Image (tube, rainbow over all chains, first blue to last red; front, side):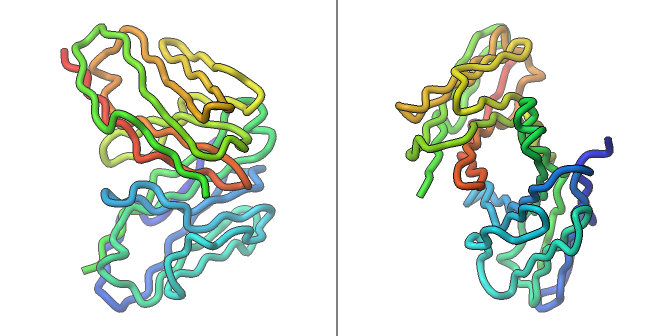
Length: 117
Length: 110
């Protein structure tokens, strides 16, 4: 099991550019979460999907952010246009009822460190 | 709105000490609570998951307890080691969301 795979690991972009972050959840997991982590605000939930359907996007900071999950094995988080205040580490996590029942909870990817200059 | 608080924000102990990290949450209607470890510049590693019907979970030197009615959880680390130095985060799941505390930064001095 390769775990939750995120790409890229690091992204440096200029203000105003479009940024796309990618996530491949663990096979068989039906829940997927996007988080943002900053020193000031800690880990914030941006959006989560169940069975590829967005359930709650109330954490998405503004219309510049959008997320999609076209199939069970892939999700994207897009920022357009990017701003310096979007600089953070973005994490993707996945889970399933069976995993939680077995006590393994939620599995996080290694994150994408985004720097907008 | 669920709020999760972790106390203390930072803790420094000498090697070998037993220690307790605290987590409190405002809404007791949770499905489960999970403790994570995060090393600097790294992702989150799951330590223990406690279902809402459980009172505690143990893994090696770690023991996590849950008191849903009072909105509290503790993570007990026995015989701490320098390798335990990291930030420890608790997260509660309710309404489909996993909500995190700000974490406790633990430093274990040799």
